[in-house]
Image (cartoon, rainbow, N blue to C red; front, side, top):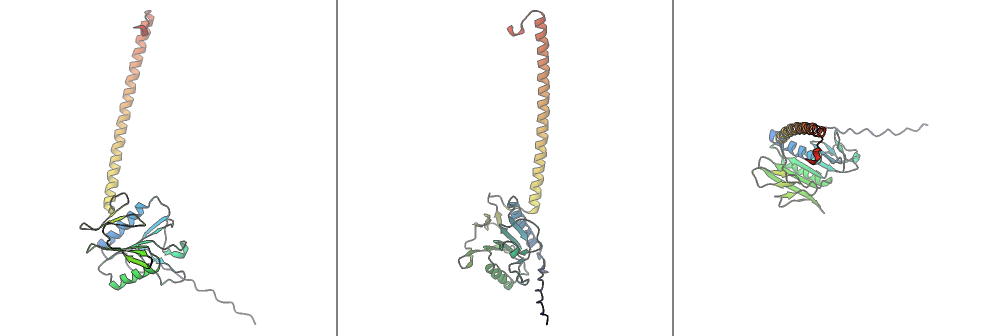
Length: 244
């Protein structure tokens, strides 16, 4: 009697979306974009730092129900590139080391507690939670027993990212390692436009300088030719111009 061959295990599909919106309001969206884009900018020259916003993270192969989509995640040691989701087993089993969440009015305490448990369980080293409505920043850093509260967090510097959080003003300020602040997209565009204008002005100045140098060279050549004509005339008269 022929033996029945075991059926292959069913293929697990890992959706690229959880069906939830990236943000509930403009303020939350702005902060997500500011943090994600500035971190992209900060690590632009490092090919092995992956930064993403609202990307589903699957930490366990074979389970498509164990997942979370941090507002911003940073993975040091993984290459840049497009991904539909972050499947940890395909990424040298490297979990995101740093995650950010931006609160909106629709977020519930239960939802945020579940996220904190998830990040604690699956290896996040630094977790930052910011409420733009109340300007309240909280943070957790992995210790020997998991994620511990960062207290105080004022002027805290991220061990992994080397960015600093300033909570003293009317709104959270984040600073790059060189001390320059995180900028909004509009501010980045304005600075880029200013830089482009300055470069254009510099180019015009260099062109003017080059024209002036060319004119000076032409004048020197004319003077040299006049001197040569005069020297030739003196020699024709039997006078050595070098003895004059």
